[in-house]
Length: 495
Ligand code: PLP
Image (tube, rainbow, N blue to C red; front, top):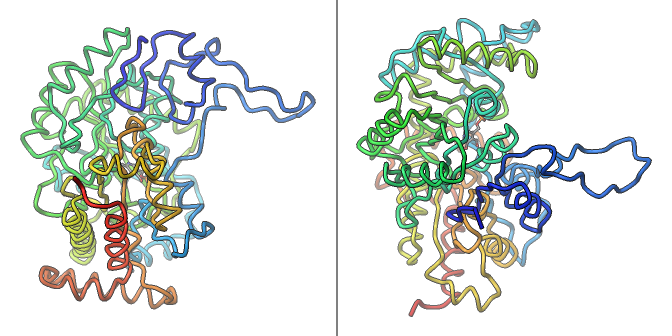
């Protein structure tokens, strides 16, 4: 086999191999190859006369695992329990009133915005980047779009070369790269410390990609990280940036969770060390709990090549989405303009995510479950491999089967490691804590009041030592802990 089996993704070199794999049951795992019309056959026709036929090149697409899980929640009965939603990564604090007011002021802005974004918003984002990342940026370097997801795809579409992708990584990078016709070179991380990325791991991946005739020239990094919740420390980030500069690799730094660092590890952008080769993406979805507003940005290096890239992105955007929604852009100016109320809101959100995520982390560790310590966002990435034989006795061999077992038997919705590119037998899962902020059986208004109360409490910085108060306000936290404890007890003691 000419493929590297470092992860759930496979690097293909050969069209026949790709074709066989494409037709096999493993199609769900999104095997990676350079698609061309010759390598893919049209799916079997279901009706010769049908006027609707999906193009072969699109027929491998399946819905994003996170979004489809979200849509299934609420429909899915589970054995005797209401399902605990630890599956969908959505920030869910109430919208800040200043953003709400700004949107209410903007409904008449029905004109298209400029393709690159409103000048005032690009300026505010540039200033936010200068202030929070300590790198130079001007309004000209910023492009706004309908979510950072769309901009990440646009980048993959217009940038040259194949993609080095650390495993595990966010669910959409690999399908996007594949849609953009790129090969994926998985970068294996240490299962005992999947939050780290080192020059040695990168060199190994680069060499294996080159050996298989790929042309790796892009590296995607994401700190704070989805799915692990980990962050690269300053030393590791500097080493990764230095490695990328020496290898002439473009860094795409997905910093959508930067504002939600928990505080014990600082957020460092690789642009501090490698400004000419780093693209930063971010947006409103996580720090401002406004995923549905679909507002993201990319910051492009200040250089001749940066200007060319901006022109290519702008051309692509002009042919696909034209501009992000104008009223949303108007309101987003407020989010990125310095304001003590808004920064206190963002900081309080980060503190609450830290408190709840750390609490569940401590529970997992006390139960003997391996899990990297979360440093940002609202994710945990536990590893059940110590229970492999116990799980086997229940017919569970893969992370997919483990996720089904947890959902069907224990009413705990999670996403399996395979969704993040892990090999099937890695018994890791992603848990999301942001949906534990829901109180039970309350109206939307009561729910908002509770969350405002929590945010207020967090703004005074008094959360430590308040764990009991927090968990009594948030019963789903205690329920999650109790259910995890029952699960571990039922699996039996480790030998
Ligand atoms: N990057 C990561 C790592 C994410 O987890 C998400 C959303 O879940 C996104 C990007 C997409 O964010 P946006 O809402 O800006 O498209």
